[in-house]
Image (cartoon, rainbow, N blue to C red):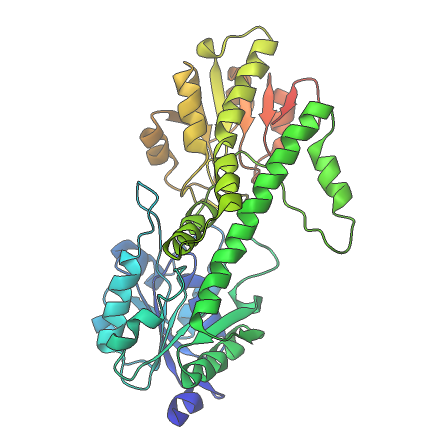
Amino acid sequence: MSDLLMNIGWPHTANVCVVGLGYVGMPMMFALAKAGYKVFGVDRAEDKVAKFNAGECYLEHVDPAMLKGCLDDGACAFGSIDDVPPCDVYLVCVPTPVDKDRIPDVSFVDAAMADVLRVAPPGSLVVLESTVEPGTTRSYVDKAHGVLLAYSPEREDPGNPHYWTGNTPKLVGGVTRDALEAAVALYSAVCGVVIPVASPEVAEMAKLFENTFRLVNVALANELKVVCEAVGLDVWDVIKASDTKPFGFKAFWPGPGISGHCLPVDVHYFKRTANQAGADTPIVVAAEGYCRSMPARVVQKVAEALNGVGQPVGATRVLIIGLAYKRDVGDVRESYARPIVAGLKRLGAGVVVHDPLVRELHDVAVSMGVEAVDVLNESILYAADVVVVLTDHKCIDWQMVCEHSNLIVDTRNVIPVGENVIKA
């Protein structure tokens, strides 16, 4: 144990392996390299490994200079953990999605942990960062063979200009005291603020609660939007006014639905944890259901907006701006755009989509059965009977959209109020 702590401490002589080079693993590699560790990455996706080693940044929200700096510090990626030099620390940052029936799928974690525990030497530290149900980290104890196990949930917020891996506080729970001590030492050098908790289970549940908290409050913001419309108020004005209170309030904003790799997914891990313990989650179930009703409401708003100008939706061309789940990223996982596009198509509308940050835009459009446009210009806007704003990327010329659109349905409050603008 003392040798491991000595390697993790200053000067950092530990070798660290990060398994999974996506939205969590890649920034973690940057932070580790910046802290002075020798870092190796592993990913089964050959294209990611090749691009990483070539200095090609495949995450649109990540600064390519950070990747270059990481490579300059000696980092490199491999397609198999068997090719990685011996390491003192292994961090598992792989996806934990849900399947088509929204049942949690931990197969990526199981596969990654099996690989890591096969090669990790006794006395090394293995930390799971992926979102999992409480008890998951401890379930690997029998296969650990002298390896120190800990859990530290990822807290990535792609596109956030203020927080990234290197300055976001880290929760850490260790299966043993030695594991906790080693994990705290590691993350203290990387993230600055580290919060030890009583057990891995506390850290695992905290991760689920953080995103379930967001889901419930987003649902409340969407419900407030409906109420404000009914009484003739602007929901954005109301939330901004409430946000002036310095205690007891946190602003959440309405939108066209829940999307991305956290909110629509983590809630199912939370619900299954509760259900397996015989506990009910009526508030969470209602919040999820309400958020999932938002795409249908957007479709209804589009139809009403068109009917208001004497155009039946079935004979119109609809331009969707934004397929990504949030501003300034290109991630379309669990995208709320899909049910909105499907709903408009069922009404007979011709749909065109645009998102400058989605790298495989045309492939995504094909999967939706619609047309994609790469460049947004005056003629594209004017050709649409209605423009529907789903994602408010800063790189889009919203003034041009405002000036050259016949009719706009804005779900993000990015277009100034005007005669041709419907807030939804």
